[in-house]
View 1 (cartoon, rainbow, N blue to C red):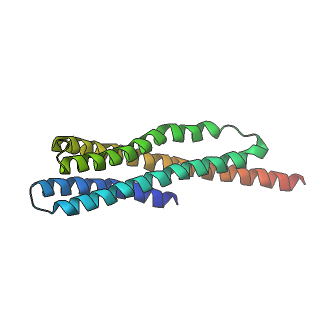
View 2: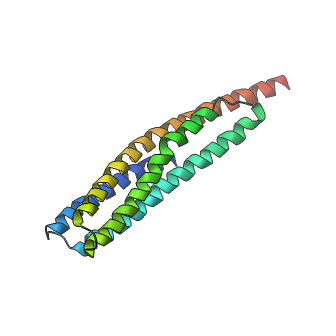
Length: 166
């Protein structure tokens, strides 16, 4: 699951970058605007899916850690799990919001309600925010997996002690 999410993080940045390039190609009439719009909408959905799944992964793994440590009273894992949420959740949330904003400003630019530069700025900001979110997401997921392995080893040691004492 973790490797899959890390891969999705990278792919989300690649998708947004491809849409930005497609937008500049469409503006130069080197590509159809309809294709840019369709790919942009799909990329925004992909970004929302990827980052939502990552948020749910963190929520689920935090719940699993809490449940696993409850019988032993171990509290040292909780600050690390809280840090994962504190570091990553805002970036993932803003990445989703930026993708939504890029779609909305794109619609406004296409219908000439808003100037094209507004969509360009929003699209580039979406690319930057998604890049940061992916970079942080990959790191946090890696740390989360390491914490889970550490906890798993501690639980095994505790179970062996319990079996030896019985």
